[in-house]
Image 1 (cartoon, rainbow, N blue to C red):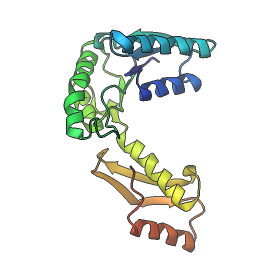
Image 2 (cartoon, one colour; image 1 turned 60 degrees about the horizontal axis):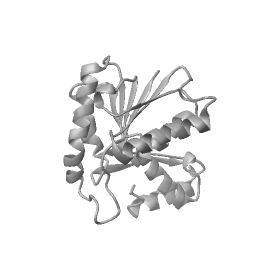
Image 3 (tube, rainbow, N blue to C red; image 1 turned 90 degrees about the vertical axis):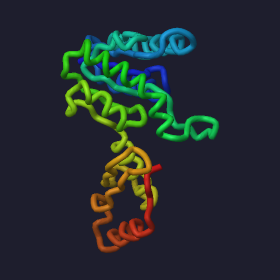
Length: 219
């Protein structure tokens, strides 16, 4: 099994790559493809990151392939983590419509490359925002069932984290789902919420009180 990370030089892409290596998801005989922008600081950063991985994890590291073109994409699992992001700095991008306009060409270029060179069975995991747009773009030329957006899962984890903080328990003990858009249209599904140790009448009352207050909602 080979894995490619599009946007491996960014904050999220780097963390994904480190986690894959630390958890030994890939054996040394497999390949981890790190894809970034060609030229300039981005290329130097990505080559430096690949060298850092080799220094830190030489004994367990899979084959590392640094690439800079959509046509070089080759993997069984493709993680899409490239593109602009919504920032907290008011000078940066704020509207998701603007984010879509900026990131659409990048997602299209990699979706088209995958359609040209892929074997058709790749699993595509979309992290880049807007997630729904990324899923739509890749699913136009790739089997829809093999394109997965990570937005709702991330919102679900945040939802559980906030509930756990309110109840004073660890997130592992909380169940609950968020569905829909990864954005203002998300839907926290309170009917799915439960917490370990809160199955008593008092515990259910605390969960009901939290729900009536309208929170928490994932950030």
